[in-house]
Length: 513
Image 1 (cartoon, helix red, strand yellow):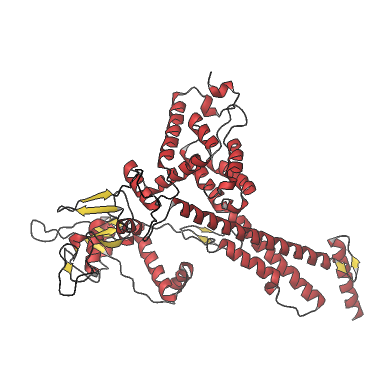
Image 2 (image 1 turned 45 degrees about the horizontal axis):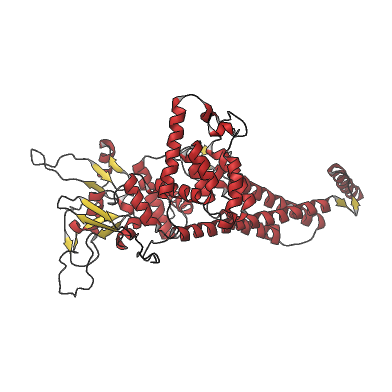
């Protein structure tokens, strides 16, 4: 008999099933816990260096490493939960990642209270109960944190998708419309020339709070279908495009937005109406390879941002080519690469050159592999750090910062292969542990957690202000409605009585004429 059975603990269905794969899955879950505990960084550890190191060591993306980090951080602060997960192996990686993400901003003083409640959330209420899905469990976790640490209550959109926020948005719109309608009726009934109902302090307060809470998140996405049954006053255009068409469309919209200094949505309307003229240049790349007859072969075509094009698509794009450039290895005297060099390096690398990173080349910096020596005078020539395409490569901003900080070093071979090495840290008794992380993109796990906590606290404060102001507007609407039910100083027992009194008064006025 297991320890769990002897102490009378309820178990989920996948813990009591006899199927051998159930035990295999629980063993995998236990191993995930072991990995997370090993990957968990110290509070003063450099996050980007930590992510880059474990990404290479484990052969996974930095996003996956970040999940392990947050899980390990949670388990380190919640020993009771850690022991349960390690012993039972009943929580999947997705469940653990959700718990790690939502508990990370909880301050140390409130961790014990949150852990005590979370232990009940991750346990079954009866034997053989099916484990709750990640979203269902996230809702309960949100409730627990909202009670124990309300300042870092997880966002609704992180728990149940965008729909929860849209419910609140519809509630705001409906309440504001009701307030304006009631105020307008009072003006019409009393014959007073009051302020614009939409400009009332209560309405303005709600709208300001809604803007502070929602920001620019409630935007309409563009795809192929038309949905007119969504939020009031909004039609959803859903447009699914082939990647090369999407690249072209976004390039035009972004160019209009930049010229007009407007949002993408406004730029989209300008583009449709033809109220703004822009010129967009997209780069097509093709390797020039001579065939047997000496003529160039029909080699594949690459569109920046879209990748390789099919033969038919490539033909349609090539018909629109207005400028041709022959690209190859080249060098310039100064520090900044030429436009031709930038295009060549991006076409050559395709993605960020850091191991395992797949950030597209067009979103990367062009970096000198051997640093450019800025100390040389104008007449001296660069020996190793020259601005030559052999000494240039694509690096996303994150890995560029790590290289600049000296945490990673790279050597490029004659065949174009890059060898990356990372900087190890002293761990002996004489090691200096008080070194600050300096340079672009350097920060500690503790400082990053502090920022996440502050951001979530600010988010929840905006949410509270919106709810408070919305409640005040609801009270005003109710008072105005009660006032509307009073006719000539007499309280009407029902809306029907009020309507009868109004009708009678109107008929009397008519008869008097």
